Picture: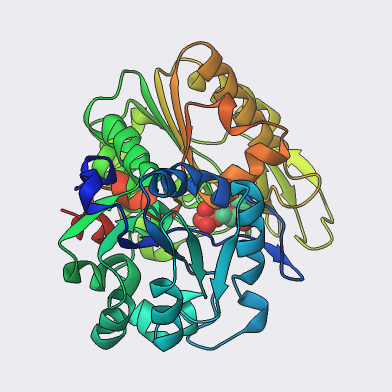
Length: 392
Ligand code: AMP
C-alpha cells in the first residue's frame, strides 16, 4: 500500500488533493453529535495543510441511496471541522461538476474544502465508471484515509483511484492497517478473540481465518445461541442462524477446546417490555437470551485476563437497552484491565465502540480502537480490501 507520508513535498505543494475521509457521523438537526471520526482524520488534514496542498475532503453520510437528502448534508460537518482546525472550511453543495471544479481551482495553498455527501449519487456505491471519472477530474493527488469504508469497492474508494499517479494512504488508514496486520501476522500468545453481536454471518470469515492462530474464541451476544444449539443446549426463542449452523457445528467439532460459550444468561419473554427478565442456566421455551449471565461474565473475565493479544468485536447482549448492558460492560472492564496488565487490545465495530464509551471508558484505555466495523472483520478474515488494493 502506497503511503501519503512518502509522497515528496514537490508532488504535494500547490496540488489539488482529493481526500476520502470517513465523516459518517451522527447528526441532530444538522449539528454533529459525536465528532470522533472527524478528530481521527485531523492528523492527515493538518499534514496536507502544512505541505501547502489545496485540499478537498469527501465522505459519505448515512444511506441516502442516490437521492439528495438535506438532512444528510455534510454542511454541519464543515462547521465542526472548521472549529477543530481553527480555520475556515469551505463547503460546496455537490461532489462532482462545475461548481466543485470552480471551488477547487480557487483554493489557495493550505485551504480546505468539504464536498457534499458522495452517496447523493447512485454512482458512488455502484462504483460507476463515469461518476468515478467525474470525481477524479478536478484533482491531481488522491489520498484515502477512510478505513471504515475500505472494504467497499465504491467510486471514491476504488473506481477513481486508477486515474491518479500520485496517491497514498493517510495516517489513519496506515495505522489501522499496521495494527491489524500485527494481530494477523505476529500476535503475542495467548491470542484471544471475543465476538458478539447479532449476526453469525459477518464473523464466520474471521473465525475461519484465525482458527489456527487464536488460542481462544469467546463467543457472546445473539450469535452465541447458534453455537449453544450446536451443543444441544436449549435456546428457547433466542436468535438462531440456520444458514450458518453447519459451519458453526464444524468449528465446534474440530476445535471445541478453543471455544468459550455462555454458561448462564439473562432472558426475557418480550424484548420490548423486558417482561419475564431473569437469570438462568437453561433457557426455557418462550424465553429469549438477551445478555450473558453473572457466571459467564466471571468465566469470560478470567479468560480475557490471560490474553496477551485481544481482539473484540460485538456486544455481549442487547446493550442499547437499559438493564441489558451489564455483560457487555463487564467484558469492556476486563479488556481494559488486560490492557493495563500489558496486553495488546484492539476493539472494532460501531456498537462495541459505543458500548465502551457508554461504560465510561475512553479510546486511550485500550491499545487501539478501530474506526472500522465490517472493514476490520474482513481484514482479519484475510480478505483483500478494495480500498487498500487500489493503493497498491
Ligand atoms: P452485529 O451487527 O452483528 O455486531 O450486532 C450488533 C447488535 O447485536 C446490537 O445492536 C445488539 O443489540 C445485538 N445483540 C447483542 N446480543 C443480542 C441478543 N442476545 N439477542 C439479540 N440481539 C443481540
